[in-house]
Image (cartoon, rainbow, N blue to C red; front, top):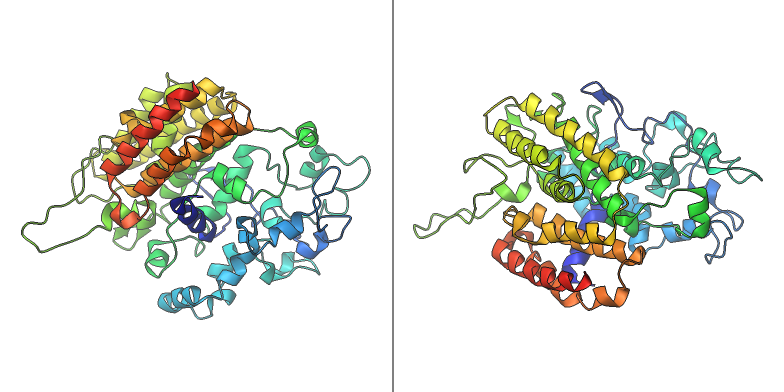
Length: 458
């Protein structure tokens, strides 16, 4: 596996922000473990060879080795289990110290809320252990009302969901649960801030389909398809991009979150668009380039628009009637941040189009031709001119891998065909090897090579 992909994976699985309750802009917050209202019984209630801790995946309906997979200390599938242990590292200790927390990281509510299933003590069952990290119920919801029933004869997924199990087979539900931690929510004191980043927390990065693959403890086999709805990786990717943007915009509209004193809350903005080299050398010149999707002058903070760009690629293929509006609204949003126009109106218009696109994505089956069309848009000059900063470039190369993997899983292309493209894909990864030395020309040239190979899949 390419070293850059490894770095992206490590960044992704380390990243966490803070859960919260509440609502903003008149919208009800998606259900998460912090507001599901139920009792969290703890990981140990899922153990047992007849439940989810077999040594091998020999179960008839489900693998039944999910607990051991979750605990795997050598794999990305064990990242949630290791989340609590991360708080014991020197890096976490130094973050807590710099922030002036009154308790060490592994005891601080600000950290436990996402590095563990950090629900309040009153909602913890007898076997609940905080040091289990991000446990089963962090993703599947409080088990108090369905734990003892979900394995009964005749129990159905629909019945379990009615008792509080999260329907994670639904991409929107899954995105809501993941983003509540991998981006944040609204409760006071439980939101990742620029101050936390400055104290040493890793940069935020998220892509729903990739994270799903990294944390997959289940098999989407014939039995799974009978009980639930299997969605293609391309649809999960597209829903993930749309839901990420929707969550960004919702939080950005919250007056309790979008300011830090006299400054905007900078966590919403593109870190590496500002964190660049500064020099007193008279021969030095800035490396910043004008971005055709951002009508803003130099020196204006740049909103993290990576999901906007990826969603635009999707819209141009599956919703050409909505794509012009989306592009105009993205420009208007960036202009409003620069002080031109109403920021509230621009945000609401962009959010409305995003909601319309989510509905369109849910109705799209994503054929081989459609997925290849989206890939073409991502890797050719149509959008690569907008990859002036690292975050969008990172999402673009993850999209290439994610969408190709989706086509393999859907049997739209053969694995060997994608394997033969690995050299070109790795060249693109190499172009974004180091965020601090990102070179747009190098990435553009690498993506042209990828595009040439993509034509062979038609």
